[in-house]
Image (cartoon, helix red, strand yellow):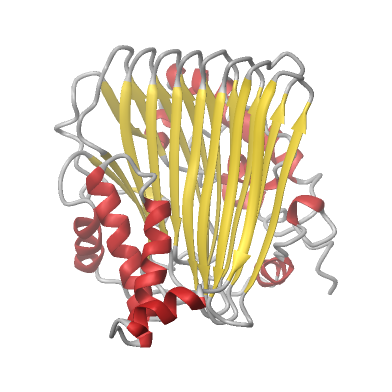
Length: 438
């Protein structure tokens, strides 16, 4: 069997879709059929496809195509509840377990006024016009295979709607728990609408409770209206055998801000594909994050920021630490359209290698068609500063402790990008656990 011509799921779509909400001639069923046609025209990602040059999923294709049966995981529900409570102990939260909304673990009775948080499956079943309108307005992503796959097979997810002029104080939590019981894939579709001059913050937690192989596939559309601000944080903490693929597509209006941060620590293979469209003047996109890899983990961050209007700002700041045989990928691209004058774009990735067998691939890109712009990018990969180590040891600090302190300081610089102190503290603690487990 060759790997490049294997297209997993293609022969399962007809049987799987019968179990999805929105059957028959509903608007969702029509969208799903169109997405299935698009998916069938793709090649499964491999190294000869430029966008996937550094992340080859061929071995996953073979595993899915051979239909390796999932190994049912004996995960106690009390353990799931404890894991969710540990990351989101208070405030509104929506919980999805193995791709399906779990109302018993969710906490949505005390949502602030002007906020709607709902299961996408329930809205699909009712053919809700607001969801359909949001999906129609979603950013088209014709070249993204996992967008097409998700639109074909997604059965649930969340719909978050913030009314105009609404300022939401508590951070809204979204918890996605994978027990590993569904190895072929959980496909989750999320839609976020932030109304004009509104402000809100949300944190996603992706929690793996299985050591086995499973596939978590996620598509999130974010629309930030004029004058609004949305802060979007994500902790990817899947199980060690997981494939985690996430497409986050954001549309930013006039004088609006989208502020995103991703901490990637789990999974065997993970890719966060971020696309942000600055479609009106004065918009700002801030994309930052950190990745922590060990063993044979493969962690990929691929970003495209599209400046389609003048006087917009974008920032990309990523830092990663790779140990053992871990591999990191950072592909960051800024496009400045012809009329997008006075664009201010910045992109930076820094990787720290702790092992001679760890590897970092970086591909920063600028594509500029306007002449009055200020854009820069940079990428560095290096090892721990030996002079700093020597300096600390000379003052009585042991080698192991000195290394840990330097690594911690390095990661903290990235996490400092998070504006909300409680999330910043939580992510810092997760980074410290990673360092302690090395």
